[in-house]
Length: 338
Image (cartoon, rainbow, N blue to C red):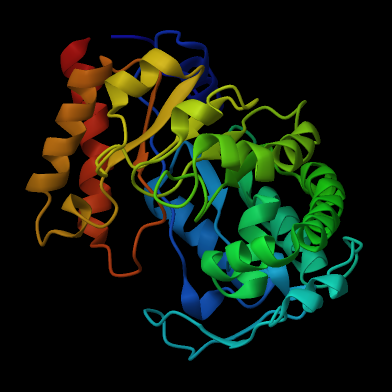
């Protein structure tokens, strides 16, 4: 059996395709009752890490933080399993895109997010990588308008106007990424959210609308240790985005029309992040189904270039015993293999 590695060594070796003592593992999800301040979010994040000792930590803030600087507002019930409800959508008509202008990172909630990064970094061991969640500019525009369908309608009506707003979003989040790394993040979890799927756009149309802005934001993290590109939804455009400058690629390998882990690894650089169905086997009342997915992932990858993780953010109702079982199973598999 390989010599024990630190968390950081394990993740970076997996990215390089080198032997690991066991595959790295990390899971993440929302804490709806603890997302409204830097202190509460950091506390929830650190409690989760202490419970499971994940190999890296994805800071999982409220999705709306990306748009709140332009007036997006959600209301929280204060109950841990209830998603927040949108109470104000800043873009109602195509003319409202004119109000989306570049903002400074000193404005809330961007400053709040930077403080959350500092607090989590302070509470984690040095050998645990911390990555900050940032959505692509087109994904952020969707939150500002309420749905991808509204964005597409506005693009048909006045594409130049929407593109000007997308540039302002990009010019807001480029310095935010720079400041996030300075605050203690080791990289990005860069998420396409609604858009990188053939159900919504062709690969050519996605590239025309989003590629330049995506790459401009990612360029701010070029020197980071660990960047993940997350390609959401079924029928995804993973292979069309596989040349994005990321160290690892996250997708729901179990979703229809998406490549499995083995096929994905044939086309991407770095590591595959996933293999566990976040809304399927992981939610079963016992661990048998999710452990079968761990075994399948091991079979597909041989334990190389694989980071055991969910296909997307896990529900708040995920049984903790299933998460613990995954954590234990990966270590046990590595021992058997050794």
